[in-house]
Length: 223
Ligand code: CA
Image (cartoon, rainbow, N blue to C red; front, side, top):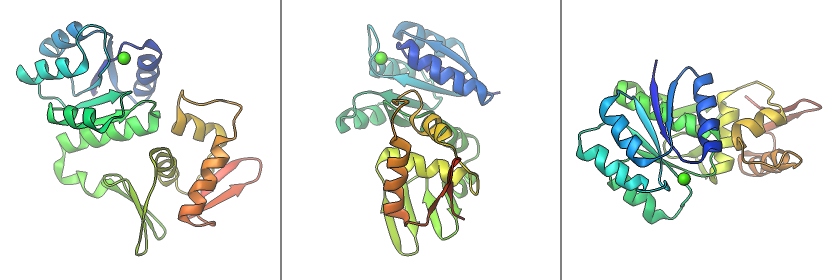
């Protein structure tokens, strides 16, 4: 069983992440402050840590610096509300392996975690799993682009996450609620028609017939 350390002071987010990870069979430990986070990583064995940057007291960068300075070498994925490029670069230089910008969906976070754990345990296999092929479309999880024939399509983060959900459930009808949970997580207005709007965006880019409407049920990626 994989052990994941979650360093996040916002209880709503850390509970959401813990619940999702536990449902996927991970063991989670959540802490909300930097000094506990530093101490815990030195005394316990974790497979990966999720690290919020904005913490009370010392921030996530300071935590990361102390971990790396003391030889803690598990992969670290930064969770950040600050989407300025400069912070991301600083985080990756400071020894983080990846970052996810808040608000994030659980599907996106899980994909990043799984990619990280695959790379650390089985480097040979990491490459082939970075691509999902459905029909003539190839979704690349590393470059976060979709290739259709000679055409290379770049998608904004949320559209890419939705495409990834469809690619991971080929031939399966996805209800609006499933798409909301997987793509938006806690971050959506339940009354909105946002799923339909985003399916429209994807159709514009992947082709009108790429996603079928199944009346009264939801949507399905055409394979
Ligand atoms: Ca925070």
